[in-house]
Image 1 (cartoon, rainbow, N blue to C red):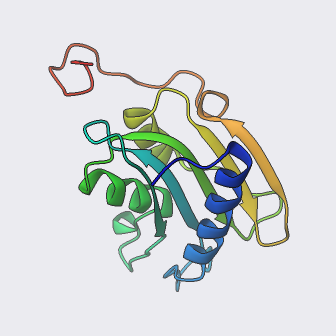
Image 2: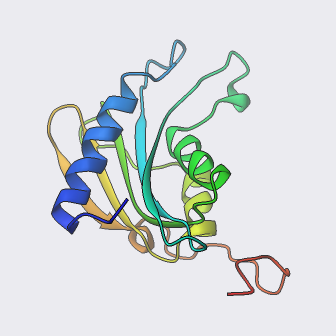
Length: 148
C-alpha cells in the first residue's frame, strides 16, 4: 500500500485506533484502548496499517496493551520500521502510552509521529521524543537494528 498524505494518514490511523478501541477486552479496569500503527517493511518497501486493542487478564501483569498488540502484529508480518501511531482512549485529555509501550516503540522507531486521541474528539499530535526523553537503547548487541 502506498503511503497516503500526512493528513490522510493521520485520519486513517485515528479511525483505525477508534475502531480497535471498540474491540478492547477491559473487564477489570474498564479502560478501553485502541491503537493503529503505520509501518514499513524495509525489505519490500511496502507500508501498511496494523491495529490492536488492549486485552486484560485477571492476573494484571499479563495484560496486553493496545500499542504493543498493534506493533507485534506489524513485526510478525515483517514490518519493522514504525512511521506513525495513533492511540485512542476514553480519558480526557487523551491518555499517553505506558512505559512498556514507549520502550517498545523506541525499539522500532527513532522518533515516530504519535497521535493521542479520545472518544470526545480531542486530538494531540506529538513525537515519541516528547513522550520519552531519554530512552534506553542497546548499542552493539548484534541486533538487526544495529546492523542498519
